Image 1 (cartoon, rainbow, N blue to C red):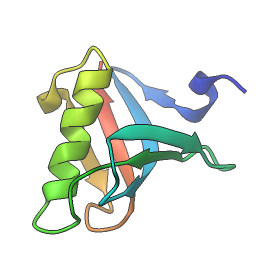
Image 2 (cartoon, helix red, strand yellow):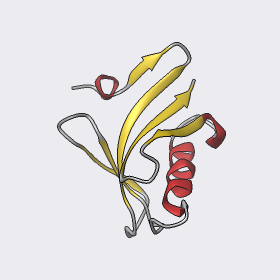
Image 3 (cartoon, rainbow, N blue to C red):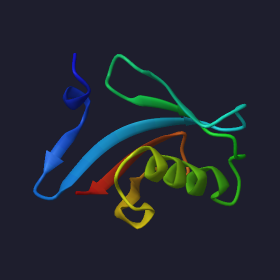
Image 4 (cartoon, rainbow, N blue to C red):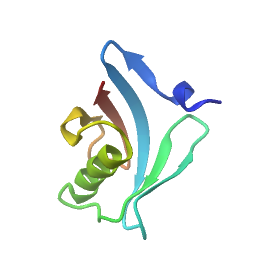
Length: 87
């Protein structure tokens, strides 16, 4: 499968599903689960939005998109999240 198979596009947005693993040694893309969920390791702890903020910064650094173009739209307090990227 191609990475595009795991991304949903709608008008000017892309949607991806991620599973965040906090308190990791480094920030990195780890793997893709069978259902297309991206597993991402994040150094920050999962309290007071620290892991979510670091996730958005990490994705911004790894893509062409500014941090304010990437937002968590579902399950912000869960390990599994839906992200919208304005393209």
